[in-house]
Structures are given as C-alpha cells and as structure tokens.
Length: 81
Image 1: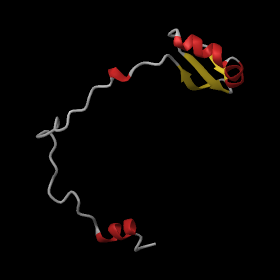
Image 2: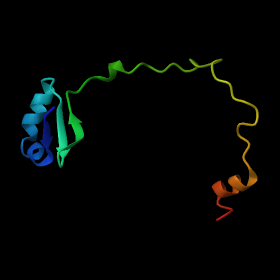
Image 3: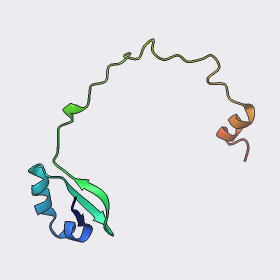
Image 4: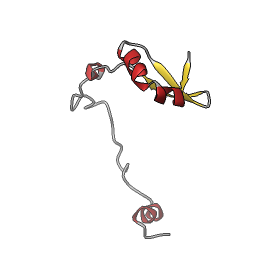
C-alpha cells in the first residue's frame, strides 16, 4: 500500500480525484502514517433500508431499567456538584 503524503495530495488533488473516480483507492498519510482514504463515490444502495418494528418481540426491557439511584440522578440534573 502506497501512502501519499498530505503535501503531495494537496499539490496533485485533481489527479488523485480522477484516479479515485476510476476506481482506485488512495491512502493519504501524515508523517508516513495513514490518516485518510480517498476512493470512488458509491451510491448508498448498499445500505439496507430500515424497517420499523423489525425487532419487535426480540428485545426485552426489564422492569425498573429506568430507575436511577437518587445521588446519580442528582448528578445528571446538576443538583450535586
């Protein structure tokens, strides 16, 4: 894997974008360590559509799950500092 440094990426950005559009993934690094990846744009069709209620009956919420210790509750509301 070849890492392109940030300075080189800024200098040749339009060429890197063309390469990414052609399907190549370019790794951009800072001080030789990878920090970002430039790749081709893909439509979000791969993300499955959410279906409300699909977990119905699969998750159980136990009684008292929302009960909070009084001291902890006061910390959340700012009553205790």
